[in-house]
Image 1: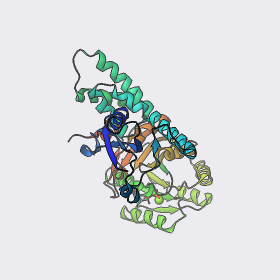
Image 2: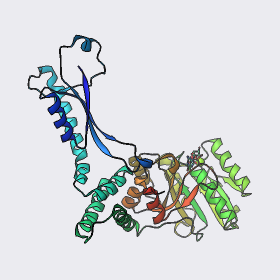
Image 3: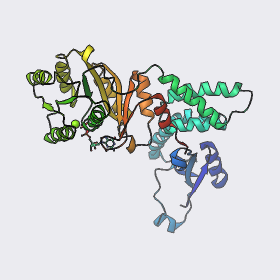
Length: 373
Ligand SMILES: Nc1nc2c(ncn2[C@@H]2O[C@H](COP(=O)(O)OP(=O)(O)O)[C@@H](O)[C@H]2O)c(=O)[nH]1
Ligand SMILES: [Mg+2]
């Protein structure tokens, strides 16, 4: 069977093309949404691609099919019995796909200048509910505007909407009001590297006398890594295996301005252990807790981690590895959902330079990056 590709701006148009070209006996081999590359991944165009063909008694084609055909859906009514279940499954899948596209196709009704902005937010994987909220607001403004708004003007309005969502959350790094900086988060997200960046700033810019405590004693390499950074900054390190060690460390560091605590939240038990340790120092008065998350993780998994650490008074999050991803909607989604602020984001492995303090402006610039360049 010869297969042909049909591309159109909507699935319905693609199907019409197939029907006009091949008639009612057409077999759909596959259908999908495709995105054109666009500039810096921002100005992508969405289209629908359908691969279809008609059954012909072409022996060579049957023996040497040009392409493998994935479970075809028959459009004619003469369907063999044993295919019924398969088709039912296909239809269920198709229904699911149509449902997931419902929101997207709704945005097609919006004027072009609005759709482009909405597509950018979709590309960044901003929560569909938030997008609906933002686009409804924008649509009202566009509709009631006396003159036709440019895409740039609509985008500025979208930025204002997002600023509004973030307006009550805390932003920015260490306050230097509290002595202990407790860095929480799962292994591998970049806690130790981020601590080194924060600590370097505290020493070099703020001229603070600092020390490090690590409770991450699981891997020798992790201890050595912290020691290396501490040596560079000529700061002491205490390795804590027990509650007694911990109390001793606090005592040793009584004359320091700032103490960074590197933890290892590997599982629930460990979280409890750190929580127990935290009881020793006066939590409310002396500790700033930061939870570190990697933007390369799935949003659902990041949410689970935030929930795991809800017992701690974490006000602000730190997002790492922005250099390894193009989509940062999860930062906005999680901040809004859990009402957490943004202390820092990091964008590379270089210590101390690859770190920025969080601000509403920074988040918005990251979301719309690629514009104005
Ligand atoms: N690309 C990239 N890598 C990072 C960043 N921050 C940390 N890393 C790397 O992630 C790995 C784990 O970092 P580490 O600080 O040991 O994580 P920890 O286990 O949470 O303490 C190391 O290879 C770091 O160099 C970042 O912002 N971008
Ligand atoms: Mg570490």
